[in-house]
Length: 202
Image 1: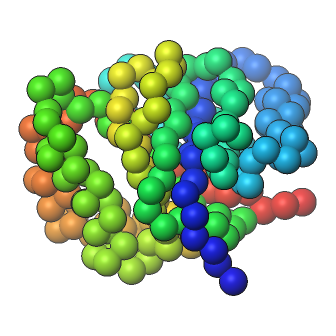
Image 2: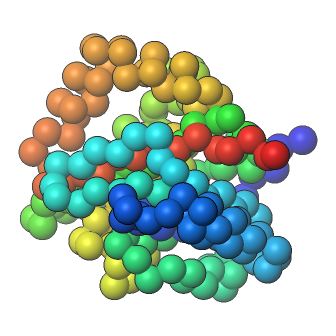
């Protein structure tokens, strides 16, 4: 049975050089997944992104995603290109990250002159996605905790889809995508969006 509690989300995005041997990349991913043995995180997943796009020069190839039960359990793990952590105050479904499900991670850098109620729009919009698009199994969002590796991105979210097909259908809903862009028009300076399929255990 699903339980609901406050969750600390920890996302690390990094880019692997294209000339690195595949065996070295596989060893790195295995090492990151081994962090689950530390018994600090309630979820650890790492691997290659299925899609990455941003409106700036930052590019990413891989992700590390962890969920912690409290802020005291959170210890930064990698000093790399992009690290964001946030407290997800909405009700997380702990077992939504099943093998084969897809995470869409969105990082936003807001315009500097925004006030609190304008920031709230993003949270309301993200929460509302579950009602507007039933295929979304879970959402997590929040304001990023301060660190030296967030590159000024202050708001993050994760949408969980059961399979790639549902995420593709979401992207093909032209009217919804247009509506979402209109809601945040003029508020966002830059965004990064990456998709990641939770690996099936061997």
